[in-house]
Amino acid sequence: MMNPIRTVLTAALLTVATYAVAAEMRGDHPDTYVVKRGDTLWDIAGKFLKRPWLWPEIWQANPQIANPHLIYPGDVISLAYLDRVAVQEGPRAEAPITGIPLSQVEPFLKNLRVVDEFEQLPYVVGLEEDRLLSTKGQVAYIKGLAGAQPGQRYAVVRPTQRYNALDPDRCCDVSGQRQNDLDFRGRSIAGIEQMWSHLTPASKGEFLGYELMQQNSGTISRGEVAPNEVSTLVLDDSGREVHVGDRLIPVQAQPYDLQFFPHPPKQATAYGKAKVLAVADMLTSGGPRDVVALSLGARDGVDNGTVFSSWRVGSTAVDRVQAGFDRSHDTVARSGKVRLPDEFASHLMVFRTFDKVSYALVMDGIRPTRVGYELKHPDATN
Image (tube, rainbow, N blue to C red; front, side):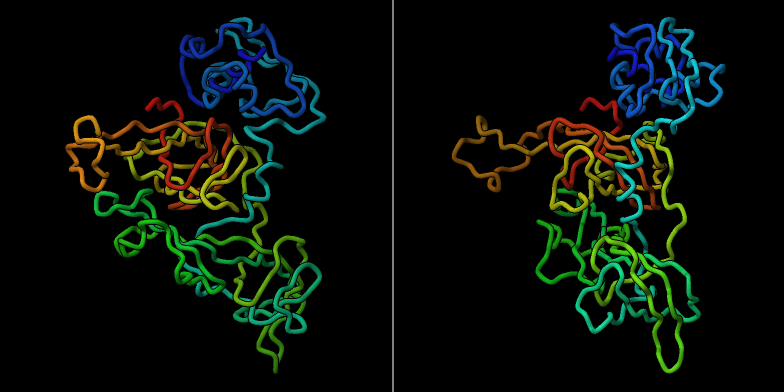
């Protein structure tokens, strides 16, 4: 039963000939598989295919399937003939299954975003009863929302990171990226630096954007009415606390896709350009179902559903047999060192894409995914 599921996922992602799909199927697949509640396309493909992110091709190779992106609990997937993979429709009482359950990524889809600037955004200038922090049911006073009308909804966001890319050939930056923690005003926190990054000024690396983390949301109850110079926002989310300096952006009606379909990258990326920038709510590493920020986005051909593999960049080791066991790393010339191979860590699926940065969910892995890891095609072997 495990192998047929994998075959389904592999075909869905890449358009290939039927014989090519057959080569990707595991040998012990059953003739049919009944889609169950709680299944995902990724899980099904993982059971029947050698490479789960290829599942779309099986559907696309069979024109009798009305919609290759919609299968439901109760559907019977036929795997008896490699040239006749078909879906027998089951009951339609439940929602279709997707690449991953929306419920697992929904909090992240609307909580993190990347912008080129934020200084011009309206901001919290005061809180109810002069509090230091406010949360659901309390009031925040907003400056810069001239013309705001009662009933308008806003998300309260906070700048948390500034991302810059570095040229690893110009300096010693281990990760090839620069990540600066920001204070409530969006300015770099003094004394907080990523290892090695401070050796190269931020201006030397391409600016990728500011990360904004959603803290809360609210509804305008009163606009700027003289002599007051602020608008009143009633907080209505039980999320993070709000404090002075937080920024406001309009609430998006649907900030994320309702379904996610895994597929390989549409274009190749030069080695050293695609990296893990950060791990949401973590310091440097994460595991399955954790969210990571990536140093490439829509301009690089990335869209929602793109799958990458993450790799620990190979170390440079001193050849102590040739150089001597008493030599330190810094005293050995390049010719006396050996570059070790990269090591596979995990597979990631992008669920939210911006121009230069995207966010992905760790789908599976054999070791933690860390900041600075290299991103490659999901089929990469080294």
